[in-house]
Image (cartoon, rainbow over the protein chains, first blue to last red):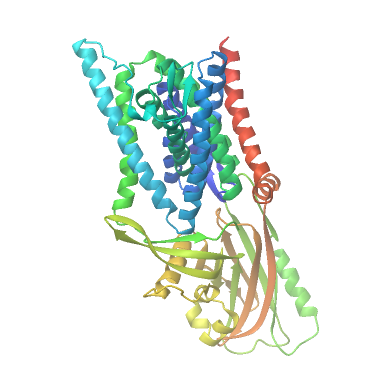
Length: 306
Length: 252
């Protein structure tokens, strides 16, 4: 069954869309990842124009993280002051990202920028995950427990404007979280992702936040930054396709529910290696498209709207 | 076909006129881009109206269907630092979003270059380039690429659908509108030719419109982008939250 997308102005198979949403939802349920970093490139592969894929991807992030953030708020596992600081940075980053996105669109380079960002980030994340899960696998075989390094104070934490983050037990300068927020906001706007895959490690290793508040606080920031970025894309580019989003979201929520149960039953480490390989495969495909001589060196971009 | 014969009878009954004229009709004047739109086929038919005997010499019919024109930029990729990226571009002032030419014989055989220039019938002449602002070595290659890409997408069709002409009087052709057409007014032009020159021309329109919901979403996105953004967020929040609430309910 074909579905006509009113903003992308093309027809896409509905089951393909549900499959993309469901497959990524399954993975995000299994591994607790947002999945935005897989949805957007998969949309490129099925022929959705990159600007629409990015803007709609970020809209889908809102759907996939909203119930999570509500649950964490109820359980009080959100460091709200930290969340607001990260969010403030995120909004600034989103504005910068949107400005850059629109500038590159005008210069005809946005597809390249989006693809390059994906190659770089998917490459790094995939390699790190692969490495991590391989080591974890070896550890479980050899039977030694992993040692967690304790939080150390870095020089960036001693910058001026110190703030107390009670839930995290931190008394640090607001600049590190602000900058982390800005970085994540830029990624959200350019790549159509939530940015949890950058935010979570940054909160643990850079800011030194305790793991019990990391997920909730990152979801809090991601939800609002994604919502804001959706608005920015809708207002400046008219590239959010709500019809496309609905199919991705329906597929995604169903997939995530199944994924959560599957994830509880299966051995996580082997699966994590599979996810790492999948991320690397997507990265490889995009890199290949950039490096291999294209079948058609010409492309057409039609001036705004029909 | 019954409709065609009725039309023919009607024509024969009309008083004689000196020249040959073309009369045409469409199987449908409107196409709705609904949620499950998969393309559409338009039947264009008509008849040649004339007095007395059929003049000597070959008679030909050309049918063109032209979608709303768009401004466009054509980019060419080149390898820079190992990566293929857009490096050169050429502006197009107006290129039809859809263009189909159907004819009784290949255009080169039945249409003189002068008539083609006057009526802009061939695909190449339906595109209006802007004067190249940047130094591009081969501007023609960009227009050729535009035609090639759109031909591959089924948006430009030349010589794909023949016009069937019966007894030098009745003609029919089918034009396929692919699933990726944009909305707007599509002009169908019918040309009657003898020995390379156009002796008569008719124009009629096909309205391609998005169906109600798609139309509404599209205009909202462009006219009220903030409202549309809020709607997208509401939809996302509703489905995201609603679905997990539903699953919780099922589980408990």
